[in-house]
Length: 287
Picture (spheres, one colour):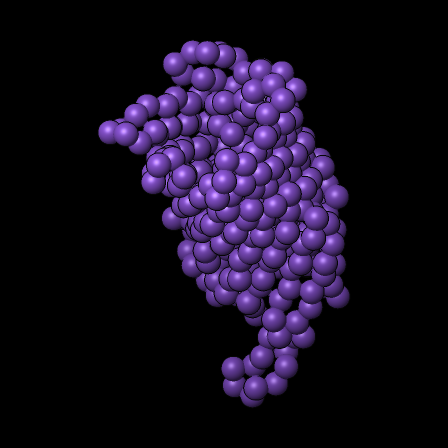
């Protein structure tokens, strides 16, 4: 079997970053809360040379809550909590004899949690800017299965500092917005630090009921720590992962306070990362 390293936790992180509110903190007493399902089933990955390679079919499913609440007009608290996470691998079958080479396995549990504080730097300005500190809490199981290669967490405490700048305008009668972000992820426990860059744009349609949103996210590793050892060659949470990824989302307001959203995303290019698309559905509430 070819050696390969997969990274899925960072894809989950990418999905969470996409929901972070950009350059606008929540007003005092206002909030946004979302319950969503995120999943990916992948039979190929990007190698450390950026090439596509097959792997045992691997699945990852996460049921999570995400929330933002404005304590003041400048300070917003943010929580991302995966309440139930399942990852599995299918049976590996010999292509020549049809014999079982390696039995499939699965683990379940809670995932790594993120808590953040966002601070509004330029309230009331045409271009709204924020600074956000995120703490990644390693609650998820970082080693499971008979080979120790099933994971629903990375086992490391990390800190991310992100700066966002966003602005809005009107196109015809449709509100639009744009946001750019740059962040630095200080990782521990043998993981390399990372730069994160994002661009996001959205337009509101159908009498302000439907938001159509597109995002591009770039993750670049400093590669200041060595790659994972041989025992982690089938890990879902690899070190020195890199990608340029996209996400498309549709968010529909059923009422003034409730709505539903659907989305999908994937990677244009990557290193040590799963190559198949990911999908998400959710329901949200606003205060």
